[in-house]
Amino acid sequence: MISLKQRKKRAEEVMQALAGIYPDADCTLSSGEDPWKLLEMTRLAAQCTDKRVNEVSIGLFEKYPTPLDMANADISELEEIVKPCGLYHMKAKDLKESSRQIVEDFSGRVPDTMEDLLKLSGVGRKIANLILGDIYGKPGIVSDTHCIRISRRLGLTDTKDPKKNEEQLSEIIPIEERAVFCHRLVDFGRDTCRAKNPVCENCPFNKYKCKLD
Image: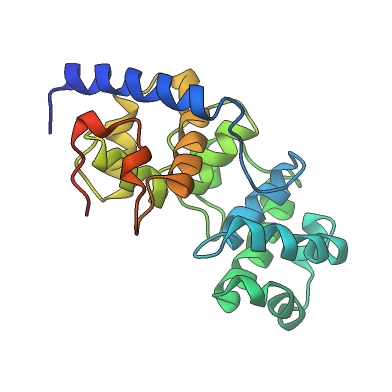
């Protein structure tokens, strides 16, 4: 991997370019900025498209509009609703349990610290950082598949491990830029730097001579 100084310089170039391409990048999950809804939708989004999650969530939150409602849900009915998102047994279990924890352990409020968020069923650092950044203004690196793939290709990191990728990016991405930077990576990963068949001819970072996986 290139030196820390070089990575910082490259990160500045990448941030500036992506800001020009995606000035209004934001989370594509339609939670209405509701912390609990965003939390549950991010859990549904594992190995599922945000578009599908947004569609499924309409009926989900109509039936279970509050954490207490979902905590008391019949698990088989909950599974049937989230089934289109895949992995529905585990996802339904996590949604029900995390809602119970929010009601019983956090007085109905989604916690605002990494330590407490990680206590919730199905919540890892990726989800926790998204909640902290988008809801509570405490930006972290959302180390998802787009973030890991693109950061490695651009030479900003050299690992496929989510936590190590988060740590390496935290060295070079300013705190105030982290949340929007990760959203821009998602947009860039969908449009251009795809996992399969990336559109390299349209890439603004060709000069970095990226090594594709």
